[in-house]
Length: 305
Ligand SMILES: [Zn+2]
Image (cartoon, rainbow, N blue to C red):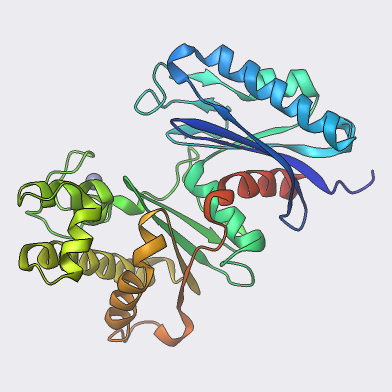
C-alpha cells in the first residue's frame, strides 16, 4: 500500500473544535474551527465534525482513501482504547460518548482518540519543541495543569490507557485543596485557577492581575507567584528523578508570558541534582501554540498508519 502523507487532526475543547488536514511534516494544509456547543448534544457535534471533514476533503481535492486516518485530541477524561469521551465536567452531557465508531463508519478510516495533553505532546515531538529529544515530558499550564510523557517515541500510559497526571504531583501536604480530593498538588498551587484564587483573597481580580502586581513589586502578589514557580520547580525535580526526560516542554496559555520565570526556577532547582545527569535535561517552550492539538492528533493517526 502506498504511504499516506496526510491525516485529519481534530482538537475538541470546551468552546471550540478545530479540524485540520495535516501532512506528515506536521504542516497544516487546511483547517476550520467549529463551535463545540456540548450542551446541544453529542450527536450534533459529531455531525458538525463530519461535515467539516467533508468540507476539508472537498476543498483539498483528496479522497478519504488517500488519508492515513483521523486523530482526535479531546479534553479528558477519555478512553482511548474504546474511543469514548467521558468528560461531563467541561463537555456538558458527554459521558460514555463513542466518537470513534460514527467517524470510522462514515469515512472508512481508522480513528484514534487521545487526551488533549497527549495529543499536544505528540505534536511537539513531531515538529515542535520536542523534535529530536527522547524522552520528552510536556507540562501544560492553563486553567488546570496537564501533562504527558513520550518515551521511546510512544505516549506513556497505564494499563487502562491512563496518562500521567502530572498536575497532581504532590508539593505541599498542607497546601490548598485540589479538585482530585487531596491537598497541595502542583495544580492547586501553580495553575491559572490556583493563582487567581489565591489572588482574590488579597483583592486581585484574576491570575493576570496577580502576575502584573508581582512585577510591580506587590509583596502578596510576589509571594503567590513565587509559590507557583517553586511548585513548578519541585514538580520538575520529581519528573526528572522519575521519568528521566531529555527535554521538558512547557506549554499552555500561562507560558506565553511567563515561560522564562518558570523555566529558570526549574533549571535552578535541578542543577542541585546528583542522581541524574541534569546537564542532559533542557527546558523549552512549546512551539506549536494553539496548533499543537490538531497537529498532534493527526501525528498519532500518521504514526499508526
Ligand atoms: Zn490534585
